[in-house]
Length: 132
Image (cartoon, rainbow, N blue to C red):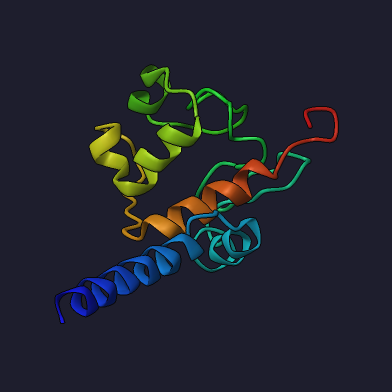
C-alpha cells in the first residue's frame, strides 16, 4: 500500500513537471499577438523607426540603451537610467515599469511571466538583417 502511494505521488509529480515544462519556452509568435493586442496602440515596430502614437518605436529595442532612440521625448528618469534593454531588464520593466525605473512616464505591469517571456522573444526578432 505504501509503495503504491509513493508511486502515485511520483507519477503526479512527474506529470506536473511535464506540464510546467510545456510553457517553459518563450514563443515569439505568441509574443507578436500579445504585442498587437496590448502594445501596438502606442508603439510601432517598423524598420523605418517611425514612432507610434504614444510610445517610441521598439524595433531593435533589445540591446539598446533606454531613452536613446532619436526623435522621442523620453522622461529624464529613463534617459538618465543608463539601463540597457537586456532580456533581464525587459523582464523587470514589463513586471513593473515604474518600480524598475522610478519617474518614467510609462506605468506598465504585465503580471503573467509567460506573457512577458513571449513579448521579449518577439522583441528579440525585431532586428535589421545586418544585426542578425
